[in-house]
Length: 594
Image (cartoon, rainbow, N blue to C red; front, side):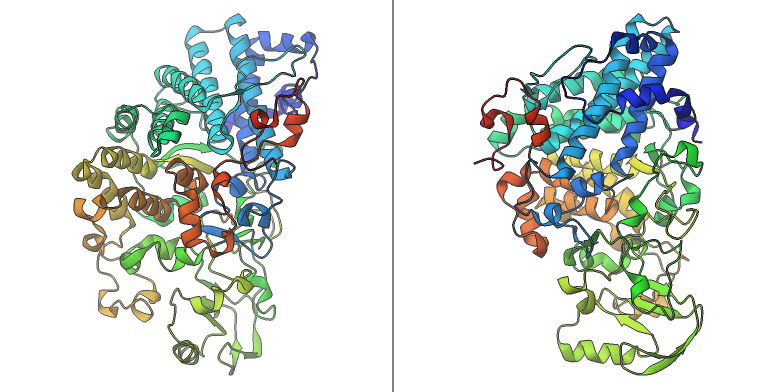
């Protein structure tokens, strides 16, 4: 399953060069070093390094910080980065997170450029050569797509650099969109339906990424953004065309897994919903620093009472870098919250005692004895209107050691304890404190393909078509006949105990009238419900020109956000390397210079 990374040990020499953090620098690499790339092993190794570089997004906080932190859905946890989450003045060109993100993307671009520059010189099977070209153009396009969404105009480098170069000029966003679309069309045409090895990109992955790129370019609302992105009237038609290729089974057989929980089961990572995943493994030699995302959404559950609840591998190591905003718990899922299994299945709502203890003082003030297997912490999403109702609920649940309604964990002062997102949890780690996770990162999955197709139709006003694909996603999200709902359904959510195993599919369906009035907001919310915490939120808000609006509405901890935060600052480390340097207005984004 993890074959693509098995050869990393054999390409250390390649990785040691292409992994250099300072790609955009004047350092010259001896041409002798490049002789390796004139062989099949050399270009294959460079390509493997470009894949491996993608792991850097999640073997640290890079993707979390850039794609989920400081949005309408996630805010700072008690041990999180306040600069990025709260848009502080320290979000500047000197910020280390910014330079790291910039550097690792250009390292990946460098690896792709080496592959593409030397590939024509290599004697290898022509069919394989076309696939290698397609893979390299896919990966380079992915890197550049992320860069222009966060930084706007960036240097467009398309060849391996083997001589002194210090005059990197920023290319217009619209030109980069045009380039990556052209490259992705080539990739789509040349990539296979079935990969030679698990983890390589395919024709379906290319179709999915093309749909995302066209949708990002076509989502511009203002005339200014349409000009910047080079928006074309046919962009949404292209979204429909390429997403439709996947949905209509023309480029492979993909489908939704039946149960939302199965999607995030670490023992079910190869499943028909995965369109493209960046792979990790339990084999330490091939895993680098691993996938660290299992750390960042975990609350400090082990600090509530160490007499009854200790840290476990299953519950995770509590880094608490981010926490969901109040809106996620009490707004995002709307009136259908109790019918939508994603709400129950996305979070850890309770913790089981690991050790026995007597005389534990409960939230209600009484004392109880606790044994392993008893409920130690129980969260509910209920927000009580008055303190009297809140206190009454606590007394009604005095059999529980710690009963925490939304009133308890809503305040910023409680940002260390909350129902944490469980999608990234990794119970297969070697030990409780091991950060080196082996869970794959699902970059693209079929549910998103359906939502891309739906958004394409909706943006054309074809809402009857859009709901066909939205309702496929929502049908999977519903409880099915015979499936037991959580106790919250009938205890706190107003459901009936008699309906505890009744299907909620009918309640989860939407009509054209339901989505037509505020279609873009509806799609952002549906994407939030389906893909919460899957490292795409900031980009979604930004492409729709909704970042500032929705952060101000739904993230009380990020009210410092301003319009200029729609772009990140260009790192000072890059600007300092430029010879000659242009005026600051050319080298830096508005809002980050005086």
